[in-house]
Length: 223
Image 1 (cartoon, rainbow, N blue to C red):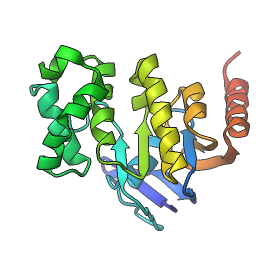
Image 2: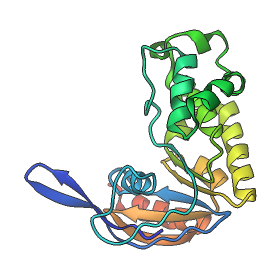
Image 3: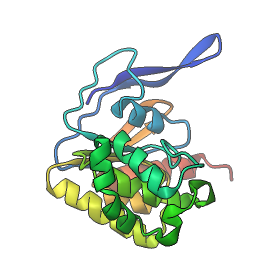
């Protein structure tokens, strides 16, 4: 994937969310996007997920994409977890009939218990993330995009997400995850891209890039 440049409009002027970004991700690879808030991580994930189109350059995505870019994306608070599960599964690529057929498995995998039939407005962030993950898994994407959603999961579901990501990578899939929980990102991904002000500062092994990023920001911190 070579997203090139993506611009975000802000009033009468505009600013580049990403610029001159050239990144390729191979089958079986987990890529972590690290960097401070506003560095372009979410913009890149949204471009990969088809939410944004690059203003310049070329973007190529070969495979079915499963996106968890927001805990609340596609979730209707007034609907029950069961009703939302159908909606989320359809958004993930299933037909309505397939989504309804998958309901028992989504109910088990989300581990919401009686809350599965309660309005999603009563759910915690972690419960919403569980439901979104369980529904997304049903479509069997070959590319999984995660934008800090995994950070809302409790320990049990973090382990499950790590297992799911590992299984996907073993099958030749791709995982691209962004966030600030570097320990979790290191569990999911073996490679990292450090973004800063919309540009790539470093690209390489996760540990090496993480250490460079932390060192730079420790040096830049006041005091």
